[in-house]
Amino acid sequence: MTPRTVDTAHPLLDETDTAEVLAALSSGDLSGTAPVVAAYEKALADTFGVHRAVACSSGTAAVHLALLAHGIGAGDEVIVPATAPVMTAMPVLAVGACPIFADVTDSASFALSLSDVRGRLTSRTRAIVSVAMWGYPADGEALAALCTRRGLTLIEDAAQAHGTRTGGRLVGTRGRIGTFSTHLRKLVTTGEGGFLLTDDEHTADRLIALRNAGKAATGGQFGRGFGLNFKLPAMSAALGLRQLARLDQRVTARRAIRDRLAATLASVDGVTPFPVRDGTPNGYATLLLTDDSHLAVVLAEALAQAGFVSDPRRYGYRPLYDYDAFADVPADACPNAAELCSRLVSLPCHEGVTPADEQRMIDIARQVVGA
Image (cartoon, rainbow, N blue to C red; front, top):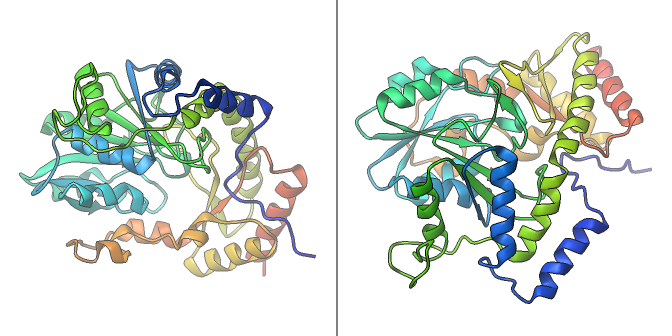
């Protein structure tokens, strides 16, 4: 019998979500400028405790808009962790800038190495991107302080980090701007979509114009400035409103499963629960570090055979400079990032994971590392 697939993705949908979407459809205003979009943005700002939120068509579009809003373009450089997903670095290419891939502090952290970052700073550096991969806290206040001293924009890519906390604050609210995805796999999902958070009113108004073909937030004509069409449809915003209302519930449930898996697997030789430093993960996934890269391959394959999908295996996770899309980007090797990517295995820890699933994943890990 083929085992059921237990993936990282687990959209939590019920009749209340359906009702919200049907209400948006019944309104007849389905565009990205419908009143429900503004209501969704207000709810996002309130939930995350910031002045403004701007919804958009994807997490990638959110990063793209953040770069455009800060005037980053041809000839500029943006420092990106080598452990980030390709969707973080692609927008840097799209605006004509050059991504500079920096190493992480060690092979068990997604935080940028400050010494490596300092060595890569040039007169062309305009921004640094921080990425909380799989919802695990990454960079602390030291990176923000460095950006302040150097006059650089700190962009927090929190695509997978809805509800993650670092230093007592929600990830995505600590830099000058935070970007999020609401793809199907995220804790707040609109199918496809994203949003940005900022405390700066001018930046928020700039983002609105940029996502709407240059039309100012106060109205007027298209093309008054540069802009693209990165709006979020009304139906997606309606779904997002309902999804946002259960975010705290989802984070609590996922953290509980993550904590149980991590606590039990901490006693298994050969694997180490990914360290949590200065913060609290949101339970997007449970991460393990194996003792070596071969064991990571064997464990991920054993999990796959039992129906449990490991994201690093699914996506062929590796440092950004190893992807074909960045073949023309000058890059030095980042040894900590390379080792981290090669030893990482993820376990699902969402509301659809049963106690039997938890035990099965634990048993597989014990069997593989004990073989």
